[in-house]
Length: 120
Image (cartoon, rainbow, N blue to C red; front, side, top):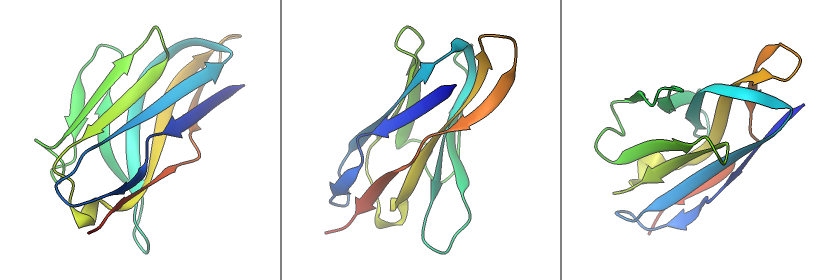
């Protein structure tokens, strides 16, 4: 019913920047919270940044001051601007959204993930 497609990952040198995008499509009535998670090899998936429908944001301590989450509701898209990247930011980044689907149900959806590698 709902698909989330991430883009923008890749290989970047330490100190560099990347911008991730996640576009939602399908039978969407409205989107509530939109989040970015990441999972590094051998580690649990962790919340990186979150943004509510009202625009309130929250960040993991490890990315505060370096990452910025934003959303464009007209495009049903959430973004993650990542600056001053560090090798420890290397992970698969996943988009998550809480979506009110046409027809009345509200569900949690995930994207397929995009690889971010920070290395010289």
